Length: 355
Image (cartoon, rainbow, N blue to C red):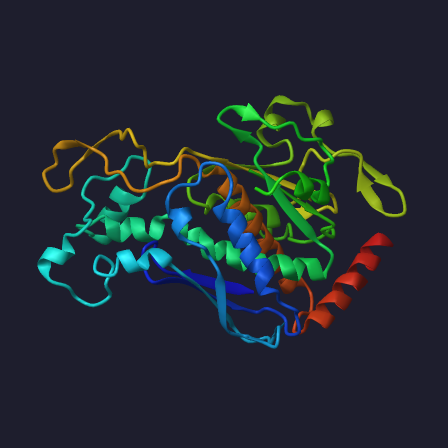
C-alpha cells in the first residue's frame, strides 16, 4: 500500500490517493469521518476547528460500500476557502492582491524561514500553507482506512496523551486497547494482537520499529520517539530491560519493556510507542525574529493557532502508526482481496503458535 497527500491549509481542498488496498473490504465512510472528528476535538483547539467540519468524500476505488482494488481517492473540502480565494488563487492575480496576507516575519521553530530559503519564496505563506498541521487531516483519513484493514485481521490500535504541561497520566503497564478506548477520545500509541514477525532484521530499512519511528517523527512538531521504556533503558541494567520468554500455549513475555519489538520485528506483545511534541511555534506573545525584507529585528508573525495540539497530535500518531502497520501486513501477506488476506494472516498466526 502506498499513498500521497496534497493540498494547502487554506486551499480549496485536501486530497489523498491510496493504492494497494485489497478488493472486497467493506469500507465505512462514517468511521473515517468519526476519526477526523476526533482529530478536531480535544482540549486547546483554536478558531479554525470551529470553522471546519471535516467530512471525507470518496471519488474512486469504492463501489457499493466495498473497495475495488483500484486506487482510492479521498477529498476533504476546506470551508475556510471562501475567505481565501484571492489570497490562495491558482490563477495569476494583480500585484496588489499578491501582497495580501504576505508573511515576511518567520516564526522561530516553524518551517517558515528555512522553507523560504530552500525554495526561494519571498512570501513565506508559500511555506506555511503546506507545512501547516492542516496537512495531517488526510493522514488521519488514510489511517482511518488503515484501521479498517487492521480490524479485518483482528488488530486494534488506540492512543492517549501521556504528558501535557508537565502533568503525567498514570497508565497501567498492561492496559489493553479497549480499555484505552473506553477512557479517552483523544501521545502514546498502543496496538494489540499484532502477530510476531512483522518487519525484519536482515536489512536496516526493513526494521518495522524504524519505519514507525520515521512516521512518528514526520508528524508536525514531533521531536522524539521511544518504544516501551525507551530512554529509561539507558539507566537500567540489562536484567531489568530484557523481557523474559515463557511458554503458555504459545510464546509470550513476562514484561514488555521493549514495547513489542526485538531485532526490528514484532514479538507478539503489545506495541507501545511514544512521541514527544514541542510547543506550537505560533505564540500570541511572539518571540523575536527578523524581517526577511529589511533584515531588521521584528516580532514573529502570528497565525491563527491552537493553544495546544497535543490531544490532536495523539490522534494523528495513532493513525500514522496504523498506516505503517497496514502497509507491513499488506506487504507480508497475499492481499489482492480481503478474503485472501484474512486467510493468510490466520494461517500465519497458527504456524507461529506451533513453532
